[in-house]
Image 1 (cartoon, rainbow, N blue to C red):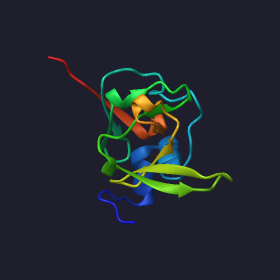
Image 2: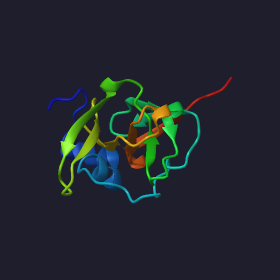
Image 3: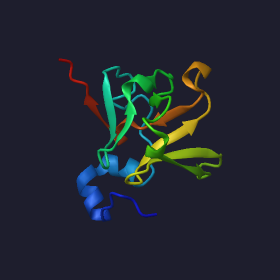
Image 4: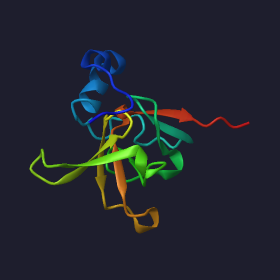
Length: 135
């Protein structure tokens, strides 16, 4: 696939560092409850660590008690791509940044109906929070 933001593997490694590279480019998963944003309630916009694209608003974040940051949806559906993943002997829906192709996490249809029913389960290491500035 061709993405708006592309880098060589060496450039990705330098840009992300070892831990983020393993998750975003090698489709890894951080340990549950280890991410900076799992229990964070600060207002703002969550950006893709790979390319700084705004992906999720803090108003869509909820406590799913799953060990990873959970969102009811991206800012717009076009910001995130989905792919079928059968790598762990089960069928899952992987989510990636549509701008740079970075692996973000997985999509599950187990969120409360009042939140739309979808849980975007995202590795914190794949995100950067740009906090809202109040005047």
